[in-house]
Length: 212
Image 1 (cartoon, helix red, strand yellow):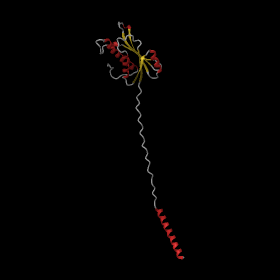
Image 2 (spheres, helix red, strand yellow; image 1 turned 180 degrees about the vertical axis):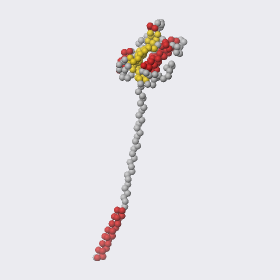
Image 3 (cartoon, one colour; image 1 turned 120 degrees about the horizontal axis):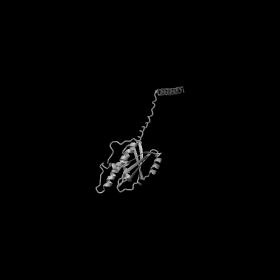
Image 4 (cartoon, helix red, strand yellow; image 1 turned 120 degrees about the vertical axis):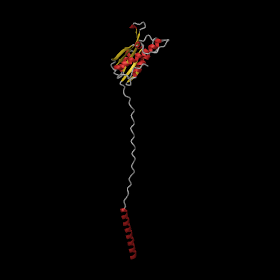
């Protein structure tokens, strides 16, 4: 019985010793801590490039033509070509924006349109014949008025005469010389009127006036 008790004590002592050794070994170990992998930061998107804004025009013009006083159309093949020539010449300046008024525009129409505008000037062009010029067939003239926005006050006005450009190289048709010659002269007078309008706004075209 004594031997049994001694053996039991030896077993308990051995178990206690092994437990102490195991605990000491475990306490001596360094626990490796795992560092979490960094979460990738999404790349910042490049800001969208803003579309280039067109520079604001220095001058906005709305151009129309009065046809009612043009009684004798037989000598001019295309009276509306005068209006187109004025618009094209004004549009040659990069700082000018030109819009077109369709139809027969009277002075009253032009004034009403100018009063309704905040920034745009209204240009009224009229081709007529001066019966008091002394010649039997009269003399063509191109008149223009520029009405200011809001107030409709006249910014500038004037008259050009196609006959002044008679010797500047107009192309004549042998069968109907008057039509082709007058059309050319009228276009030259129209360009001159456009350049005068620009000058009134202290704007000048680069180079010599076009003759084409």
